Length: 212
Image 1 (cartoon, rainbow, N blue to C red):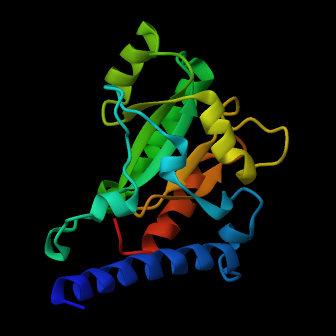
Image 2: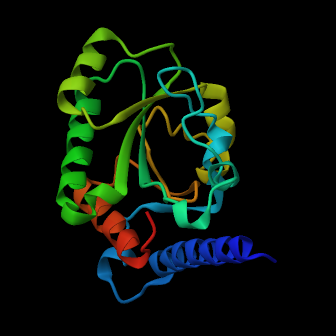
C-alpha cells in the first residue's frame, strides 16, 4: 500500500469512527435526560445513503455525490468533508405552517453559534417541477442560505419507507432528516419535535463528532 492510499485509509477510519460513536452515544446515552425523552429524533437503522434519494439541484443535476465519488482521485491532503445536512421535506407550496417550522429550523441553526458552519439546510421539494412564486420569494428573502432541492415522490417514498412506520408519509408531515458528512441519512425529526429538541440533538451529534 502506497503512502497516499495509507493516508486515505486513515482518513476513512477517522471519518467512520467518530460518526459511529456519535450515533451510538445518541442512541444509548442514559446520562442525559434530553436523550431519554420522547421528544428526541428517531434513528434511521440501517442508515440510508443519500444517493438513494436521487435529489436534484435547481439545474437538474445530482445534489449529492456518494462518498466514494466524492473522494475519488482526491489527495488525502485536499479532502474537505462536507457539512452535516438538515433536509426539510416540503412541497412546491410552503404554506403558513411550513414557513413557521422553517423559521424555527433557521433559528436553531443560528443558535448553534460557532458550530453553525458545520451544518447546511436544504428545502426538498417533493414532486412538482418548481416551487411557486410565493414560496420562492419567501425562501429567497427569509431562507437565503437554504438550498432548494427536488425529488421524485416515488423515489423518495421507496428510499425512506424502511425508516418510518407503515402508512406514514414523511413528505406530507414535513419530516426533517439529518445527513452526516459521509452521506448517511441517520436521523429524522417529526412535527412532534420542536426546535429546542432538534437543537439539543444536533448539538449533541456535532459535539460527539469532529467531522464536517
